[in-house]
Length: 89
Image (cartoon, rainbow, N blue to C red):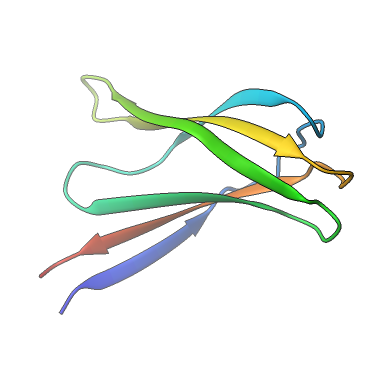
């Protein structure tokens, strides 16, 4: 049976509504299946969109997720990233 681990970013970054910004998060590894999401952190924020996502690694096994995020709406602009790792069969 597969196991799942959920992770949140340790901070909630602010992104000005109506902008597109690249964010990075060093999380993950090559042994599990990983999925990522970004959500508004507070109410009254119309939305966020992952425009593009890609992964880079280095020789020390650091896996960095890159997100190109667009925010829209009148909200506060605080966003929150999450990751889910699935392991096993």
